Image (cartoon, rainbow, N blue to C red; front, side, top):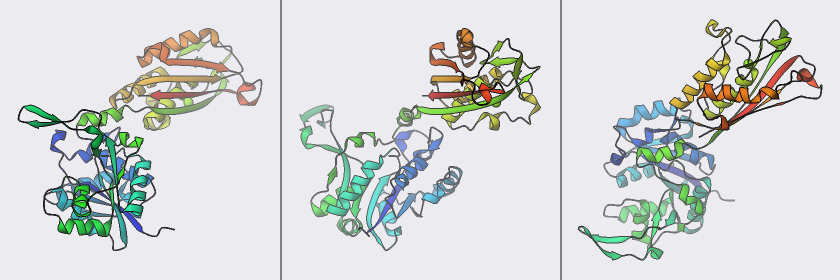
Length: 380
Ligand code: MG
């Protein structure tokens, strides 16, 4: 069994001037979570590291602590170091902060917050075996050498690789390389190469996903990743209430009991939508205790849910509702239900599906005591 202690150092002290925002890009939010927290979670999920250290700019310390507290990632950080004037100085501060038992170190740019677990694992395994492991991709564009405005030579791209992080090394070897290094390094591999003649490359197909957030738009590519949510609701059938499903009234001797119009299908749909966006549920958004929602049409609430989703950059890809009721029959009103939802949600009716089923007399729906509904929603 391997007993070498393995640590990660996340370098987050840069200013990211190309990013074009007044703050450090590691605090940029993608899909409601900062680049930094995403990066921490990505490394922590691999379950490889005995500890994760962060190198941060001294000026960012308050923001760093607040952000991690808010995003519930503070416990993933085992120590911090302050950045220096250059990347090299920052990395050295990070290496110095590591505990004495550290044998392997993975140095990772915070901006590569989507690093796949398989890439992290392969780099660490390579460093354990060979002393180094650096993720790399082949070059697909033709690369030219330039002189002024002219391209003067075409390089053989078969002999070129683009390298990423985490760049992973035996710590003692990397430190020795840094001691002898005299120059400007844009990555740790070049320091290691200078002393040992080369680094081991890890070329996995998943390296393609290990993008670096350099421009705000890099994050947006992932901002529209698909998210799925599910919702469920049930209401009691009682006399003296209207029966409303997906905003459509059904002539029936009973109706659903609830604080609002008790539209169980729309409630399930809203919970699916909110679930997909990670925004809680309708109980949290529209509490029963609030008189504002007494008797309110659930379509009004759905309208609000959709505007909330839009403000977060989500759009509906599709949703599917199943209503479970013994009676009344409802499929003759299916198109009307879909139209009503589509109008309220301001989406194409083709994105919405409504189905109904009985339970062959079993359970509370089958006995006519109530109606339930389930829904799933996919957001992009
Ligand atoms: Mg409900």
